[in-house]
Length: 480
Image 1: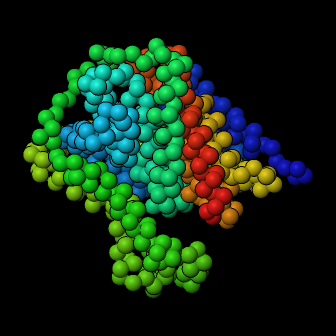
Image 2: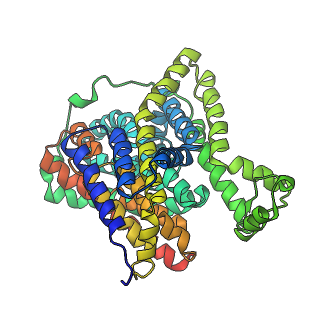
Image 3: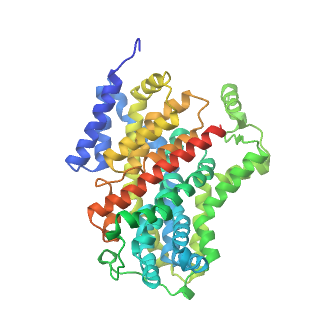
């Protein structure tokens, strides 16, 4: 450890401690806290005061960028499908196909599909009335279906773009979103099965009081009712929900086959100097793509995919479904409101990351870690777990962990950033407890006490995290 400088690490620890104190003890808004702590940490690191504002601005701008469109349009698509009755049609159709004996699997599958395009909180609000009705008709405890539902939504939130956290972390670490999506599905499905239907069997035995037949739920309030014949068709609802995902997956597969995994260079060859072109070629970019390759790159870009998907949703879940433009605009407005705070939190986390990078903390961590035998994937997961347990927010945990491990990923070419993104996603879900809004939503919606919520919700979130990490480590062993 000759020449090792402990000061940046001490500042990082104190900075995170200050962040937690202001959020947990003094209940200061998370976004405000992240910005203020970023400034304090910048001064402590001895940064030039004239450059602190630029570090924060570049951190926010560099991370949000296209993500504003991806998040905003993704939320709008999810809300349009929900408000038109498309989500109800998806859930009802799958449940009818699976039958009563496989209700858990039907609910999990439907929730997973819906969860790809809906924020966790929105998905929970949308699905609870449907699942509650199904539980009443099937005469089973609400939690019997609620655990698979919540697990599927949570797994989608943690691992799959265009969900906010994995999308933002992918952006920070430079991981291709299409690959994150493909491997994210591979990781999410086993995690969803273990923490959903399998865990439910054990939970029924060690916390039987939570599995009660419920006739009324005060937390639901007014439940929006749909007549099945008046909702969009199953195929149209599925296509609308997954269109952006389909674009990204198909174009990623084509890129792997046709382009041999190389990305298309997006600049103008004639305007670029030889150093830029050499760097692009060395980093695996195609400098002279065909028209077909250019169009595939265009359609597979998350921003373009979301624009096309939203335009289709405006028709399929709007005029085609008999909704007026006033109703459609109402859905769009509600969607924007639901992600406003989330975008601010992501921006605050990006500001903190910008200061860590500009102030040299990230470089110091990367330098120290270069002599460690710990896997970068395991390290990323552990950092995310620590922040998740401390702060409560999966998004803050993911963004902060990404800022810390980014230079490690950049310095080690043998590390696949896709698996680091997924490891951070897994870690950001672990051990949700009383400082997480999701904990209280689960408690209220399923009419549980705090002890029952800890034994069900906290455990299922941890199971998703640990199972996800195991699958990621196995994948990383065989795929580089």
